[in-house]
Amino acid sequence: QLQLVESGGGLVEPGGSLRLSCVASGFTSAYTLQYYMVGWFRQAPGKEREGASCISTTGGTDYADSVKGRFTISRDTRKNTVYLEMHGLKPEDTGVYYCAASFNPRSPICTILPRYTKWGQGTQVTVSS
Image: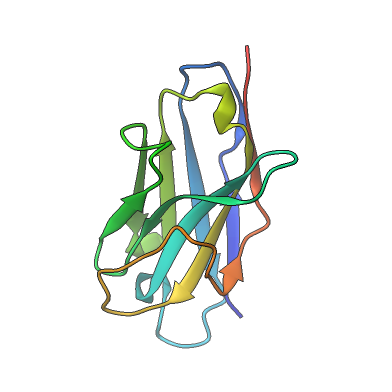
């Protein structure tokens, strides 16, 4: 069964950078992570989970307006890993960051809506001085 594990979170000062990783494992067929669209979501205390970014199986990407120009999503198919590079971090970026995946081969489309079938456990990102 597909499992997603996030890492790379931590405490960073405003203006700082972090790189989050989402490693997938447990594939039961030849359809590895490259056949899945992947999204990064975040949830601040007391707020609803919101989409930050996503990447399709053909490399298409999308970003929430709040992170455009600061966050970059990418994937390494050999490592079954999706990354979220975050720069210019702000206190409002604080929250638990989750990656999520859904099987969607050969599609240029991804979504930052929480319509994914598999979710990781999350990694905490705190932006504070």
